[in-house]
Length: 295
Image (cartoon, rainbow, N blue to C red; front, side, top):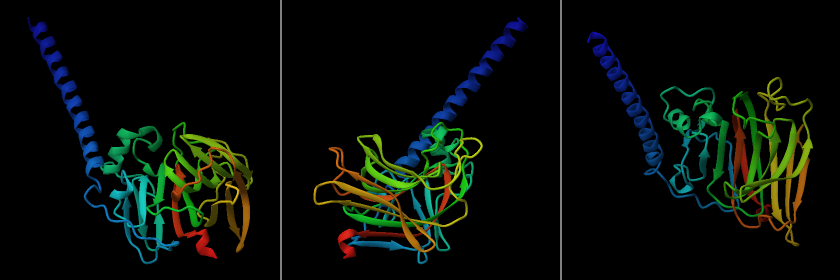
């Protein structure tokens, strides 16, 4: 009888523990859903009326741009953080989240549930950083000054040679855009993403070394400021020209160029912005200019 009672007590205790664990997990999911539903939902502000030029060096700004589900929910008049948790502006520098988030951070909880593999169980939402303008542009030149402060050596299979720091243009949505930038394998790249499918339009090695996911995971310099420019414009014959430039010793050098004449070319206006993958990045000057505004 005693053995039977002990078994009943044991099974009952296990049932209570499992039940409590399920309730706890559901509570975490509920809280994550609450964060998604309420963060910024009642704090959105109207987008600024940008006419031809958007420039900042962050010297006159201080604060945090929080990730939002849509541009209309952004608390910034100029920027929409589509992914990455937070864009932090302090002491004249903008930056991704740097280092590991506190275990009780709301973004750590959200990303641990929504995309644990790519964010190291939510510790590094900056692995998926996407900062996008709220204004839309057609023929545009954009410049950015940035430095990589740390690589995040994630176990995610999506940490690979294609990662880097890039400038996005004609961003219609996350599945339709151009991007041009520098990859961790030391190459300059220009790509088109159309209906979710990437196509490489240009690729050129610009940094020395051999990429290896484990032993040499990035050829991009650390703690060294890099100034990069992209140009996107539709030519008279309908082709879309995309150029990537890098400033070296005060002089601009074109490091990649592509002419998209395909039926998939993106010829409509879109947002612009920057993205980085699996790294901590600081930003200084950002300048966006309409091409017609330059002349």
